[in-house]
Image 1 (cartoon, rainbow, N blue to C red):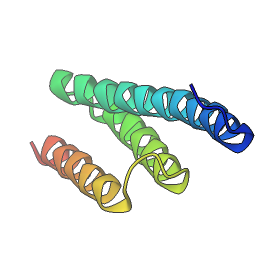
Image 2: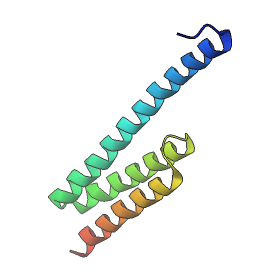
Image 3: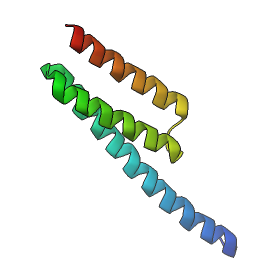
Image 4: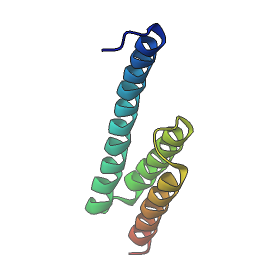
Length: 89
């Protein structure tokens, strides 16, 4: 345990950030999973809406610093590619 006042405060801030990041990551995974499930069932309309939601969640996570912008771009690209394959099939 830290003895220095500033380090105690830093530890509190880090814990708050950790919990916030954990919540954001969890909701991100949920939105991507929902899109994936809709894509597997072949529901194009639902998958389109969920892809938009997942892309928005990825952008928000990037702006908050939870994930790297390149990781968000790669994930958005992958779900967009999957949606296009679903539409053309």
